[in-house]
Length: 378
Ligand SMILES: [Zn+2]
Image 1 (cartoon, rainbow, N blue to C red):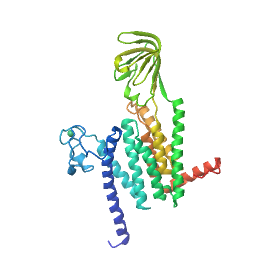
Image 2 (image 1 turned 30 degrees about the horizontal axis):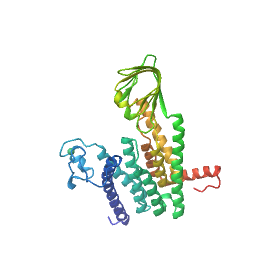
Image 3 (image 1 turned 90 degrees about the vertical axis):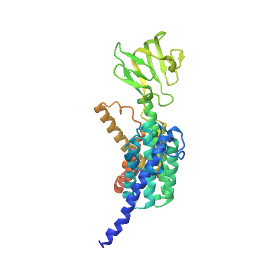
């Protein structure tokens, strides 16, 4: 009872509680960001409202975690279901802020807050990427700026004591993070940019208004055309439209244009199209340019060596989930999950590795690079 060590521990865990509650409140704000930022709506006004009936949620109901539980996931006014995502994001943000405090709070409170800021950016980017296959520039470009500024303000974020060294590490994190993803992206475009489906003899491919149907699966257009320049290509032995039939033509289809040989049509006006072909190539890219910018932002926070290891961790997590999806034959996951959340997951794992491991990993990488380029300081 009078042991001073007990009393010394109390304030720290009082702050642990405060950080968890603060995290759930930030999570509540992140829910607004996740919903509105990709829709180009203001994130400050109007105040929280039900997206279904526009009912404004009164302040006394707008409590993190409790609101969703209390309303049992339904709007109080119109009973429209409220996604469990709102509850999960609040809980996850609270838990991550608490974990950040437990690990980094003992070093410095300011450092813990920088880590919380980083985690908040990772969370918002991941949930937006999962839903919309984009990561807004506010989070990626903004994240680079915030990461550089945080490294300037709190050099310990980069495990050093002086500001010029921390800025240099942060800057190298941006360059290396962006550079590696960009290289993978360029190589990937050549190697795995599209997925080729072989169609068995006599098999037909049906195109309707919202999806294309292969002999063994149906693929919605929204899974195919989520970037400009996404093209479906095939050579049709026969191609039947409601009023006309083509033989032996090359076809290229984007979200806005259907090219049959030399003829250009608007796919929205075509309706049903039935094709006999040997194979069809469909764009399926795991990564986009948003991931290059996102990895640059992660690099600004974790530094040069950290960004390389985050990437490795993210790829391992991604590979495990992809293999799991293949085994479980889950079409929900296969080829549909964007890469951003894996990068974020890699960064979270890295941030919570023991300090000694982080140091060991960084020094091993330094040694490796110095072996190749002896004069480089990063
Ligand atoms: Zn409502």
